[in-house]
Length: 135
Image 1 (tube, one colour):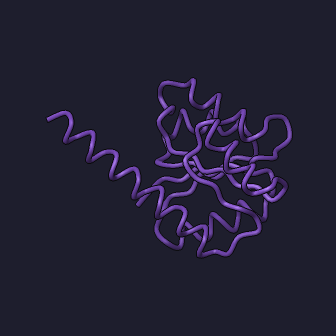
Image 2 (tube, helix red, strand yellow):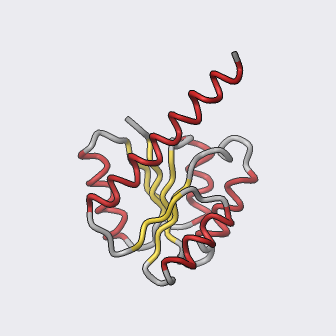
Image 3 (tube, helix red, strand yellow):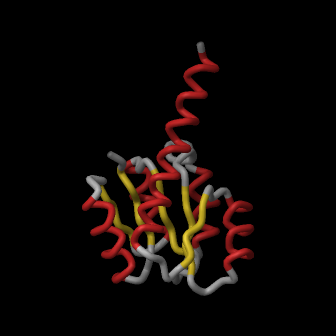
């Protein structure tokens, strides 16, 4: 199972995602904003991160850019989520800042679970490819 960091200033969203992911056996770390999430990612090395785009103090795009500057956690896959942006624009901006996926809010629980499954599958494929290329 994975260690997932959820970054969102909206407590009900954090708690919903925690409950969903823990139900599936994942360990869930929570952060309210970008600065707190940078510290949590560096200390706890999550397998993947799901971050809101719109947060006070530091938006999700800035968070991802700053995360990529930290050598110890720069390879952690990140998915962005937002309710306030046009979905297509948000997907493009997410890719540009280094996120690998996007979750539109509001979301159905099965969409959040599918997002985690996709991200974990991509990570396993990347690890396998890296191991094969190293041989």
